[in-house]
Length: 91
Image (cartoon, rainbow, N blue to C red):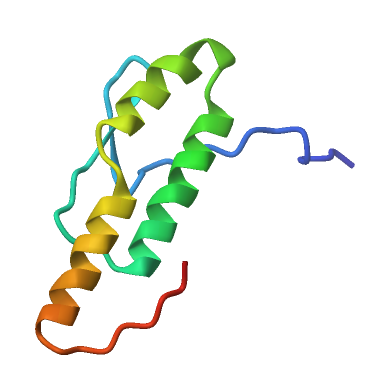
């Protein structure tokens, strides 16, 4: 029986990143993200990096640095506070 543990899992259609055609992914910049969406974006980034060759990691990290989902999550939290919505911190 074949073991699939050593195989790389690739995302067929990333939800939060656009494929650029050269093996890299550009982040989709959202103004506001929920804590769950932030976690999903960060998880997707980890999966994309794990599926890429090491030669692409530095360039990919630069693309990821162009959009920080933590900033968008904080903006969402501040918007909720502005309207008096209680917000619990998960992170």
